[in-house]
Length: 224
Length: 245
Ligand code: SF4
Ligand code: FES
Image 1 (cartoon, each protein chain N blue to C red):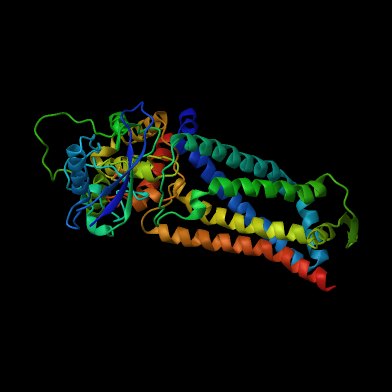
Image 2 (cartoon, each protein chain N blue to C red; image 1 turned 45 degrees about the vertical axis):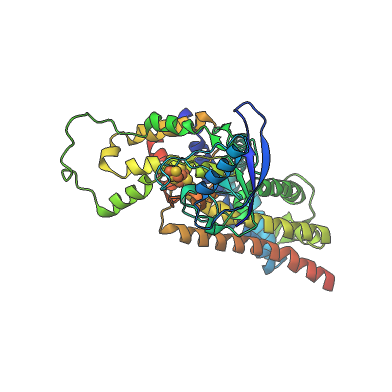
């Protein structure tokens, strides 16, 4: 194990596997978010279930661990990569082959962390520890997550930040998904294009899927 | 034709180094890139100046010596071409050509455009071989190998060890080179016996020497003069995972 984590390839595997885990998490997150469209009752019920179900709560530490591992190990690798090329070229022509996103995963990652801090402080942390208005649905008293979310989504600066962050997340995923699959060794000359298309499709669905909600509720708030 | 050259000059490993510009007239389109440099050097020698040091040997794309970073790309603009196979037809009359040495912490400049690539040899010495008794060569057909395996092993084996992968990688990673060497042996029955030990040792040596980690960026594949594919890196990852569990 020590040789595994001591090797760049082993560390990359940690980044790839934790990345794929986060990829799965985002799907669940997106599905939950989309229930916003079904109205306050549905969304609040889902949010209440997510906040009280022991299986879901049990996954939280795993998620935090996955996220921290992904961030810590990739940061470590990025710093050692900078050391491997101390001197820049005068002229660089990244002719074909490499995408902008693939060359800037670190910066994209840092932007996503910054957004995540804002995101967690406005939703998850308030839902778990803060005081949130209560509503009663089918006889059960629960936190009004719907009101919390839609109020946030009526602030122009929040919606703009959110949308930009989703574009950056999309770029990170467009390279990240195929890169992780390559890192865990699931690639050959036939699967290459397929993984790349799959990763791109996933990135677009996630980015658009998440961004569409704040924009929808912002427009709605303006019209009412 | 007439060209403007901007070349990295550095007297020794310790010297600071910098770019020097040269206007070169009388270059013909028929010249190879290295012949153009030979011609530049002959004019420098005539003018009592130090010629530009650059590495070259076979001049037919098989030794991997000619490592020049030309106009922002290793081995120049042609694609799947070594510098020695590059022709001056690729350049316009009056154009500026910037020539730099490979940039990597592990490939220090020795002089002008020559870098020390002995790190690659060290990686090979760590495990890029099969242990076999010397003596008469065994009968070639005694171990059957599927055609597609043999072809894939050959695709990896054509790596000439030029280092363009490291030079083009924003992370300064040597993974394409190491993956080509690991793949070439991992695909063949003769290489299987030591496969686990080999991949661990070669990766450890690569890390120890200070190469960066692979970000699956793909710049190496785009610039490799031999068209080595990053699917070999996926194979290295598989081999490494298999060797670790
Ligand atoms: S993999 Fe390609 S670029 Fe790298 S050393 Fe081998 S031939 Fe050169
Ligand atoms: S001089 Fe041998 S490959 Fe170019």
